[in-house]
Picture 1 (cartoon, one colour):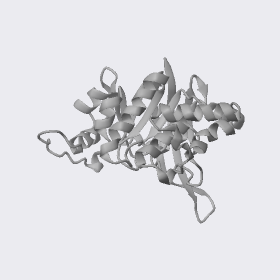
Picture 2 (tube, one colour; picture 1 turned 90 degrees about the vertical axis):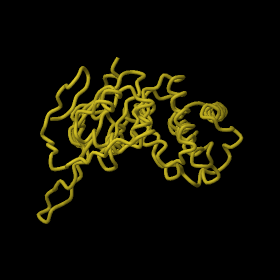
Picture 3 (cartoon, helix red, strand yellow; picture 1 turned 180 degrees about the horizontal axis):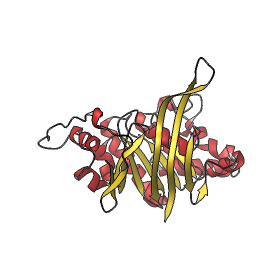
Length: 290
């Protein structure tokens, strides 16, 4: 069953010209379409600046999309009223890339995790405290640490706090925006294992935004590769990474460190990129531009 259906998503940024008219200065997302099935982990990959994060923020309307359609459980999100959008956000949450910048340094960890419950007036103070303790245990943190401030935690622990905050309202859809890229390599695997364990236990549908191809290969059933705001290739993860059909995807794969002998580096020639090229099916369920 399809839970997430994104069609022709566009986000442009404009600036006033001398004549006072809006002039497009950046097309961050340019006609992105994809679906995610209920309970699936879907990867959105590409270099920094390709539009991955903007896509995720548009889905939750943290930034307003310019055009396009997003249906969540067959409900149109972009046309939802402010009151309805507030209710929908209980079921759609995001874990941000920077675990330091996304946590209020003046609040204690327990209050950060509880904040969503307070805003949505869920439960009593006693039940909310019990829920915070449950969430701390769920993400592998000692509940006695909930009275500490974010600066008193390591980077990995802060990201666990961010995950606990996102799970507090019991969402069914979670967007994880580069959730481990700001962490030391030694603790990245620990945090990802927590994500995967909780996804399985809570039956979450997950959109994983990342540039680490080893990571998406490990956890995602399907992926989409973005370049300059567009999806240039999408399909089953193994098919896309083992038999890349687009030149940009081949360049990404060749740049990924490998165990053993490193294959020759393939340099993508930007002059060959045709943004007007349509996606075509190169194998069952595997699509690429050109």
